[in-house]
Length: 68
Image 1 (cartoon, rainbow, N blue to C red):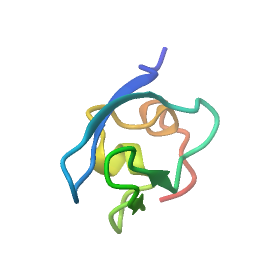
Image 2: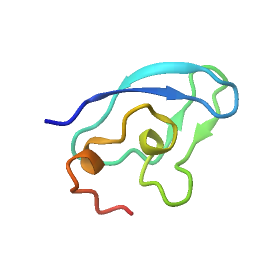
Image 3: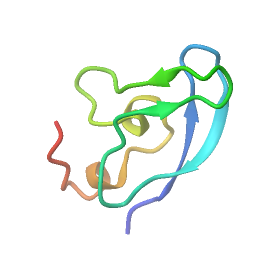
Image 4: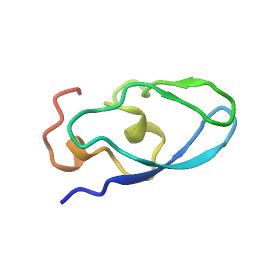
């Protein structure tokens, strides 16, 4: 069973927020609540949770990600 919560940290302003991750898809975009920057994954990562979160996204956890 995948972990569904991750703590995202904005690389621009450092704002931290706990989020629930989607179970059936990778999230390519995320708007920071602190500075309103639009976050995108770091090249080589499938989603913002894999790049900026404390837990990889559920598709990666389940080894079913087709994004990378």
